[in-house]
Structures are given as structure tokens and as C-alpha cells.
Image 1 (cartoon, rainbow over the protein chains, first blue to last red):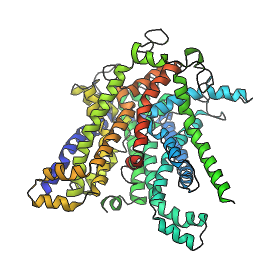
Image 2 (image 1 turned 90 degrees about the vertical axis):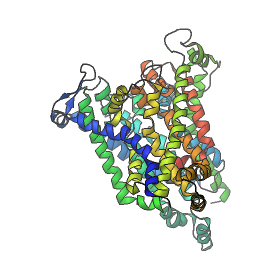
Image 3 (image 1 turned 60 degrees about the horizontal axis):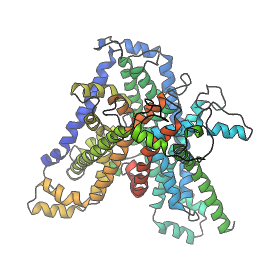
Image 4 (image 1 turned 180 degrees about the vertical axis):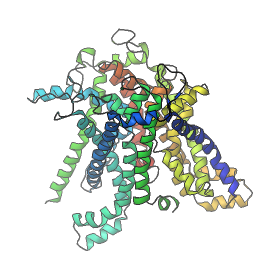
Amino acid sequence: MGSRSSGLLFIAPATVYLVALVIYPTVYLYYMIFHSLNPLFDVTPRFVGLQNIYTLLQDPDASYAILAMLLLTGITVPVQLALGSLLALLFTSPHLRGRLVLRSVMLIPLSIPAVIVGLNWKMIFFTYGPLNTFLSSIGLEPQPWLSAPFGHTFNTFFVLAVLDIWQWTPFVALAVAAGIESIPPYIQEAAALDGATRLQMIRHIVFPLSKTVIIIVLLFRLIDSLKIFDIIYMLTFGGPGNLTTTLPFYIYKVGFTLTAARADIGYASLLAVILLLIATFLVLFVLTRVLNVKRVVWE
Amino acid sequence: MDKRILGLVITLGAWALGIIYLLPFIWMIGTSFKPIGEWGLPTLFPESPTSRNYLEILVTGGVYGVRGHFPPILRYLLNSVVVSVTVAILTSLLGAFTAYGILRYRAGGTFFANWILSLRMIPPVVILYPLVVLTKAIGLYNTLGGLVFVYPVITLPIVTWFMIGAFKSVPRETEEAAMLDGCTPFQVFTRIALPQASIGLATSAIFAFLFSWSEFLIPLLLAPSESAMPLTAFAGYFSNQYGILWGPLSAAAVIISLPVIVIAIMIQKYLIRGLTLGFIR
């Protein structure tokens, strides 16, 4: 129905807009890779050729930041998927009382701004905060939760990972629960008639039919996990030392603050391109290998 | 095992988890009503509750009479509301328009749809500096207009994909009939398709609102002064400057969170659908 040109008219405004907002910045980013610009002292970018790339190769902070980002994602996302799927079974269990209220409670961590989640936990983890006071009152050792270096039992990287798991497991749980609930009830009723136990039904019906949903959730967790910024800004500002400086936060430190060893917008742009490449690679991998987007969208 | 015992175990277990999610939030509400002497105490609820934290951050500014520490946040709150509402209206309309072209006319094909989707993936920190340069060049740096101009980077992909899903459930037949009756494609869109997808449109506007309301990094760098900085960015920035003013900070956090939580619970049915851009229904 309709003509090709009217279709193009419908997408034209957004296209023009997004070209200005996304394409232009991306092109500018690649331009900046070959330039140097100190946020404090320089006014115009200075051409430096491949110097930023040399810097990157000799910058242990950058390799650590990439590693820290991948490690954080590699720890939190699988745990969230596993715990969230279990929780989804709990949410959809016919035995659960007060399901609606519980689900509303679980919406809190995914609806309030990440900054506020960070602020909230900052109060709780504060050295003289409620958690430590509580621990000492029951005779346990208070911990420097937000400034514990690597090697410490509860080092801050670990605390950050646990918090991210806390924050995003409900998202996985609610999404998988929605998936489970969309399985037509007659399938399980038929299985029950055939004498299948609840565990058998979960294994042979619920799990296979929830696979697509779990993969979609994986995709979104992956995307957002590589973006984590607000929580780190609020809780640790990348510290102690470099411990929680993941790549997005390192880009911020290099490009917008004077806290990194180098403050240079050109170099930050190179790091940004690296982040973009890693994110694109990971997401494309999931999209093309695991999830058939074309099918999901058009059919 | 007895069914009733199983039910009890499941319910208790689930609610034990629920408490873990509720406690930090209750802590925040409790602290927001604590007088200055109680901020550091590990009690969940204030012994002598006060509304002073709220009064000071909203109206007079300052912390327990000390001016200059905490400016009144009304201006920041207003910035948040103005920007989020404007972005919600603009992006939901633009997103609906785009989604309609993608779905009904297959304009731009799968490539265009996927490209829009891929924008959801870009970490904001990546394009932040170019956006600073861009907004400075067109005179929108540090203005509310600048934020309204930039936020669609985040919200437009979400809304567009959400609306693709919403239009999918609108029957094509009525649109085709309207076409035959001589409506232009634009008229079909505004008079037939959009009204039928109005719930989807409203929901996507709410999502655009929520995402704008929560945005932190972009306004932190694009709107660094009072005239444009939204409340979320202010609370984050401020708490890093004066970390331990827990009372007023909690009050600000409650003011930021409450509307969002109310909205989230209201649109609970659509929340997961929205967060997964319509992939999970």
C-alpha cells in the first residue's frame, strides 16, 4: 500500500535528526583520533598523527580499563541471567502469595535513576554507615566497602559487581517471567495430564520455550553492562586507585577530568572508538549468531 | 512435600528477597526525615522525624541554617520536568512517525530499522565530546533546549522500536480502506493509525520521560550550571562534592525517585516490553 516516496517522507525527519546527532559526532570522533586537545589548556585540536595509538599501546591503565569492563560484564551478566531465570520461576509459581506486590517491589531498582541507586548504596556502604555499624554490633569486622583495594576480601570491584547483580537481576526475572507467562497454558496442562512433574515441565517445556526471551535479555544486559557509568561515578569514582575504572569511566576521566595520568580529548576519542568497536562486535555477535532479528521484527 | 508447606516456603523465600530490595529504599526515605544529629545512626526510622530536610532543599536552601551548602533545588527540579516532558512529547511523536514508515512502507528496509536499533547500543560517553562541540556551535550548550536537542539520541531508538510493536497490532484493513477513500498517507497516519495506537503512544511517551528523567552523564557535561542542569545530575554531582549531607541528599533522592516509582508501578504491564523495545511482550 502507498508509494515508496511517502514511506521515505515518514522516516526522513528522524533520519536527518539522527545524522546530526549520531553520524556527525561519530565522524568527529574519528577526526579527533589523530588530534590532541587538552581540555584545560588547548583551544583548537592539534594534529598529532598516530601518537594517540602509540600512547594507547603503552598505557597500562587503558588495558586495565578494557579488562575491567569485560570482567565486570563477564561476571555480572551470566549471574544475572542464572539468578534471574530462577527468580522468574519463583515469580510464576502458583504457590507464591502477594505476587503483584512483590513484583512492584522488584521494579524499584530498575526504575529509579542509576545515580540514585548509587547514592542510596553509598549511604549504606559509607565507612560509618548503617551496614558497618550493624556488622560491629553483631561482632563482625566493619569493611571499607568502597575503598577496599585488590587483594582485600571484599574488594570494591567485587562490591560493584554484587551491586550490579542486585540491581539488574529483577529485570531478567521480570522479563523471563513475562516470557514464561506467554507460554500457552494448555501445553503444561497436557503435560500434567500425562503425569509430568513440575521439574520435568520446567526442563522440557518452560526452558526451551523461554530460550528466545533469555537471549533477548542477554542482549540488553550486554548492551547496558558495557555502558555502566552512573553507579561508578557515584560509588567509587573509579577507585580505589584504578580498581573500578572500567573503559567508559576511563574515557570520562581522560576526556573530561584531570584525574587520569593523561588528560586529552583526542586520546579519549580513540578509547571511545575502541569501546564502540567492542560493543558493536559483542552485540552483532549475539544479534546475528544467536538471535534472528529479521524474524523477530517483520513476522 | 505438603503443598501448603511448599507454598509457605516459596512465599517466605520470595519475600525475604523482596526485603533486600525494599530495605535500601526504606533507608533512603527514613534518612530523608532524620534531623541532623541522626544522619549517621544505623536506625531505619528517625526518632524525632522532621520535614526540615525537605523544606530546606525545596524552599530556603542551605543545610540546618548554613546557607551556601545546598541551593534550593526547585530550579533543578523545574529543569528536569521541562526537559523530560518536552522530550517525551517530541520523541514519542517523531518515533511514531518513523516507526509507521518503517513498518507500513518498509522505508529504509531492515537496514534502517537495525540502524535505529543499534543506536540503543552506543554508550553516551562515546559521543559526549562531539555533542559538546555541536551544542556549543549552535548556541545550545548549557541550555534546556540543548538537552531537549540531545536526549533523543537515547529516547528516539527506544520509542521508534516500541511504536513498531504498537503499530503491528493495528489492523491494516482500516488504513487501506481510508486510502481508497482518498486519504493521503499522512492523513491515514494521523486519523486512523495513531488513534488506534494511542495506548502505545502514551506508553512510549512515558518511557521517553523516564529515560530523560534518569539521564545523568549527558546533562552533567552538557548543562553544567543551574540554568539548565536537571535534578538527577545535580544530586549526583552534589553528593560527590559534599558526600555526607545525607539528610538533604536523601530528601532530594526521594523527590527524584517517587514519581518514577509511581509511574513504573502504574505501567508495570508495559515496563518490560518498553525496556526490551517491544521484543518481550
